[in-house]
Image (cartoon, rainbow over all chains, first blue to last red):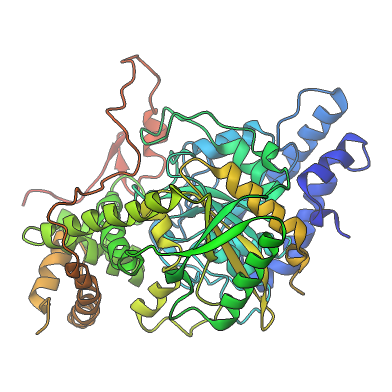
Length: 485
Length: 96
């Protein structure tokens, strides 16, 4: 067993007994990356030189017995829409190809304080718009389980790098499913925290009322470690919640006896593959065997979530992405001699097709004469979707269903029609609209490709999600399955 | 009947500060029409008495003390500028 297959707690034990050094871990990490990333293509930028220096510094700490951070010596990959001081941050867009941030995102600062090592920056769909990583402005990332399939998106490379054993864990971001869907496709654990639990300061904004940063890991336990390090109020993000952060690791009691599970019939309906339904029913049986009960319920407004999401997220994106004007940073076109043309040419040369399409949709939905009919209407339907969840959580502890309607699909098979691609997110989007937390954990395979189980919880009740996910993980072998690379 | 015309698409592109070719305008007209048509299923719902959600958290005004703090230096601010002169961002002519 490679040292990269171990959990944080096991690695910490080996560091403690000096059987292993941080340098060993970082060496093994880069060996693995150089061995497999030519096939997976998860990284856009590697931070190799600095990582090795930092490993030495941490090893000195180990010898001197100085205080160690919660994630001491652990190598991490970071999605390329989270800014890292002095390390190129591109959002996988040509418009930011050479952008070097002048500050660290709050999550990066907190990880540094926890003594992690930033190994590099991970590919994604451009500006987090996409479900397959095929919208990267640079190159697609491949699914480690089958290199001809997509890793999901938009945090596709965050999931693929963890699945391929290139990094122990990674950070992704989730606006409509962008952590959970790739986690499902790559057979790893991905959590979208409650809106406001993790600071968005330094996350390049896509849709500000929906975006959340979250951890992608191989085990539920490691996921809780990572969330512990990054959660909590941040004065630099005015939408960050002021809530007490519990000890997430204390939620691993293994006890789900008496747990009340709601299973929305809309999440097992038309469009969801039979294999996916079967794996979810098997998972429910496992939880039943542990003393939980489940009932079918209805989230009646689910079918309106996709349209609501595309109107709201594109509207917010059209405003957020107006900052890319070729003046203060980013690509500037040389093909213009006045200011307005310079804006237009720079943006048109810098943004990819999907990003432009969403800016257009958002600008239209916000434009004079259409605002009430589209944007405001969608905000009202969002209220109804949110109330669906509130009603269910009055009687149940968690909601369970599949993460995505199918397993991963072949590269290039869904790029023709934007609407077909958007259907991938029908089971994850309602969660973002309601602002509640949800995790995807592996629950088996379909034709050799992983399927994800989605566990949705109440606002700020990540502890219950972790308790259920951990109990399920411990009762099954699914998380032990690994891709052959 | 189409929900959005090619002229409207060109107007929206101007508002969004995007340059589109005739070909792109045609493609976008077709694609946006389809997406907007899909979005119109929201009209099935009666929302006359529903409050819009702008934010999921019950946040009131978030205030902080008005304290003097360090800000970004000129060098840092100019670090990623595509064109600059004397510590200022340089842009093409604004006035003819």
